[in-house]
Image (tube, rainbow, N blue to C red):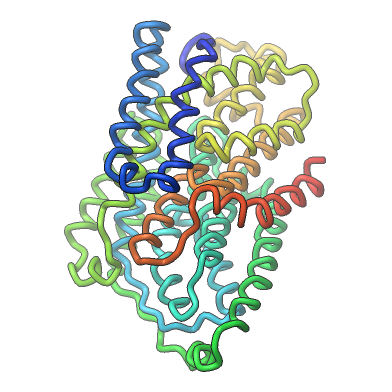
Length: 437
């Protein structure tokens, strides 16, 4: 991961991370008011314990700096897309037949590759809630998270944070589209088919007058705040600027500020826009990024020692950890393990000292030994990020916006048991069976 030699932390230091995950899962369920008031303190204290251990115990200042840079890169992209998409208002009348809903989610899945899963989620979640207002329920929110906030963004580095970090590490921009589109088609097709059945049952249960109201010809769709497309363009352009450090992030923050101050107040009001969802993500992910360092370093130290490996093992390993660790650093750890295990620069007949990590990955990515592994971790990180609210940044934001608008979103455990297990688990099994078995 580009932070010098391998760091092997004491496995006990994974406890703060486990504790943070447990409270994120159980806090809102059992002591909601306490959690809403105190979650920042908890995230900061647990994060500080890990940072103190790394600083004074392991003297791993480079590792801390590296994590801090990754956090800034992550939050700049997620935060700027949140602000800019919050300045675009899509006006839509309730017209949520199951057929129209499927088309809307498919559009969201495609656009997630251009705006990122965060941008697409923030742009489309409010119109999605308005469209379905006559019968909105938990499955509308969760399938939106599955499709628009996660699986949809599998085709470009802009699509999802793990792929963006892979791009920063040297994977060419169009490589993901070239190699992952068959898995994307199967994943999106499976989820849309499941959604259609669930939504059709829900639609038929709705009272007759509600169904007639929904089936009325819709008003014209209207887009307000289109100046924000310029700021969106700046953010997407900034993605391609690797140097100097933080220039990309400065451009993203500048675009977000421009958007915030130039968007009409009425548009922000129509979108019920405020900073609470991104603030919650920023705070919780300070804790997550800090406390998961020992888990990731232990994983990296031990992954390259695995004896019997196959793309299948990397698919399930990356996937299962992406649901509970944030999917971006999990992906990076497995990418490092792949490069470490299969392709030392010497083995490829190159002088390792002549290559940066970026050049090494760029050079090795298409070798037949490595390519299936990188495809496996790319698909797994994106798809399995849908399995919990903390698997991917936008999941939390969508839940937060749904809660704000008084729409029922399931609890952390309700999400896993009522939706992940019956719908996402079969989807990732089908993808594994067809492509990685």
